[in-house]
Length: 286
Ligand SMILES: *[C@@H]1O[C@H](CO)[C@@H](O)[C@H](O)[C@H]1NC(C)=O
Ligand SMILES: *[C@@H]1O[C@H](CO)[C@@H](O)[C@H](O)[C@H]1NC(C)=O
Ligand SMILES: *[C@@H]1O[C@H](CO)[C@@H](O)[C@H](O)[C@H]1NC(C)=O
Ligand SMILES: *[C@@H]1O[C@H](CO)[C@@H](O)[C@H](O)[C@H]1NC(C)=O
Ligand SMILES: *[C@@H]1O[C@H](CO)[C@@H](O)[C@H](O)[C@H]1NC(C)=O
Ligand SMILES: *[C@@H]1O[C@H](CO)[C@@H](O)[C@H](O)[C@H]1NC(C)=O
Ligand SMILES: *[C@@H]1O[C@H](CO)[C@@H](O)[C@H](O)[C@H]1NC(C)=O
Image 1 (cartoon, rainbow, N blue to C red):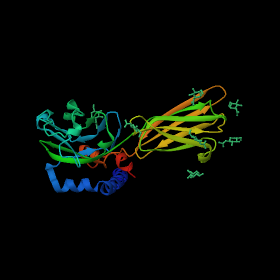
Image 2: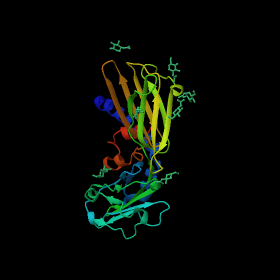
Image 3: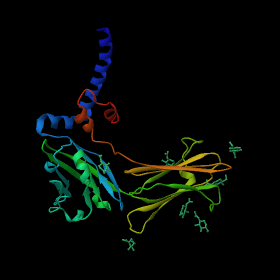
Image 4: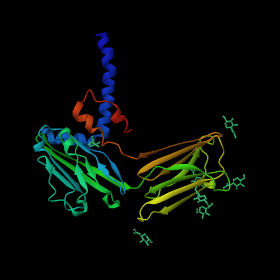
């Protein structure tokens, strides 16, 4: 009994935290569950971002069903009369598709059976941004979820030594961004320093007149220091680092999409049930 209580109380405590977080962050999901009862299935979307000119994915998953022929997937977009994409009886039905999406959409047909209703969108355009709805109907029930799709342009920066400048300088270049990002420099040695007075950033429209090339020059840099060029807009954040020493130049860069978290807790909620829910998806929201 002693053994049992010492184990169960922290577990219970965790469970309570968990429930509290669930109630707090998944309130809308929870309520739709309770109201709709057994004929409601969980559909989960991710906030997604598309890079103009490239192919994108609007991410949507649902509680799987082994009866493929009974699965209906409907993608719609707010403000658009026709559908974006429809899939039923194991194949596409594009009879009601809106012209703006003609020839540009596909679901991953072999993934539908495992509950993946994600939509592939070819050649993303700025105007593809908006609110989409992923509606699913299976033999178990129906459900839908909204997805906020952002579009813009983002690309990896490259930082190099600028041998043309009059003082020791670094040049950070990224080919495609939209909307116009902010560019901030930082250095490992002078942490927190403001480099805005010793740098010069310019934006140059690319030929399609939407995206822009970003160039930023940082003057008066010193050796043995690591400098970072950070580019950020509402959609993505990218960093290029450079370290110049007597013998070598080291570089690295990375790019991260902002706000691409799952809609609260929905996936684990359904599949695993209450007690075994991992804590992480909920805590991540905090
Ligand atoms: C759905 O399937 C596609 C193609 O295999 C994959 O790229 C995507 O990540 C899947 N989405 C989810 C949410 O599993
Ligand atoms: C440096 O100058 C050369 C010659 O003037 C020019 O061709 C090159 O594009 C310049 N490089 C940069 C990074 O500005
Ligand atoms: C850096 O200084 C400039 C003016 O010199 C100011 O506009 C900017 O907000 C400062 N940036 C930060 C991060 O403090
Ligand atoms: C770089 O340093 C030199 C000498 O210290 C100074 O004259 C020059 O103004 C500096 N350049 C910038 C852009 O701050
Ligand atoms: C910044 O760059 C632009 C274009 O490259 C140039 O015209 C301008 O004089 C530069 N400004 C400073 C303060 O260096
Ligand atoms: C981009 O804008 C320029 C000047 O405004 C114009 O001459 C050019 O035709 C435009 N290009 C495209 C692809 O719209
Ligand atoms: C840079 O670091 C190397 C090795 O740590 C050292 O030998 C060199 O003197 C340093 N150079 C400067 C200018 O600080």
